[in-house]
Amino acid sequence: MTTISSLASATSSSSTTSSSGTTLDSDAFLQLLIAELQNQDPTNPADNTEMINQIASFSTVEQLSALNDTATSIYDSLTAMSLNSAVSFIGQSVLAEGDDISKTDDATTVVSFTLESDAETLTAHVYDSDGTIINSVSLGATDSGTYTFSWDGTNYTGTEVSNGTYSVVFEAYDEDGDSLEVSTMVAGTVSGVSVEDGTTVLTLSDGRTVNLEDVYSVVSSDA
Image (tube, rainbow, N blue to C red; front, side, top):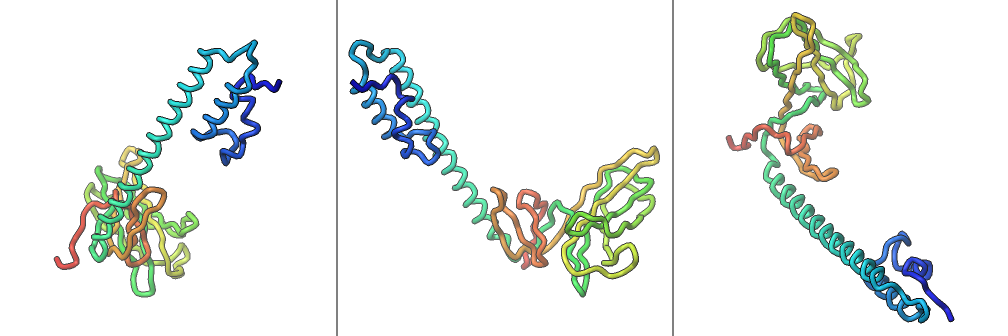
């Protein structure tokens, strides 16, 4: 007589019920359970407690799977709602947290920055898309407040660099030599929206991008 001592011993014959071979759907589980009951050794039947535990475990997994499907559905719905809402930003001017600047033949966009405390020294470092500093501009002692920084589009040697997107990071120290935090803002007109890794992203007309959650203010194009 052929015997099956447990559900685990039958998984090898039903590996095709799962793409990974290690998980079972409800149909596969029931087939294995029936096979175990039909082929068990009459002189050594399956333990009732073990059988109940197997069924209870499967029931829990099924519930968790259903909960995960529901959570995924809710997440997809929220993402769609966020994307639909962001569409209304197209054509509007936004101010958002960020440090990217765009250089073209005609001009270079500005960055707004805020100092919470007086700075004894303040330096603006310009980075290219590879993360390499191509220029540093000393702004000297600067009182606390909000300012704008405009880069002339040149590197350390004074040579004009290629058009594209760059970033500005400010380095500030107080009179005691302690580092100060400097927050930055960028502005631009929204030309498109997208979702990247679950985050709604606004694309500006010059190619820069900002996260929707980082938008500080919106100005209508009709204002």
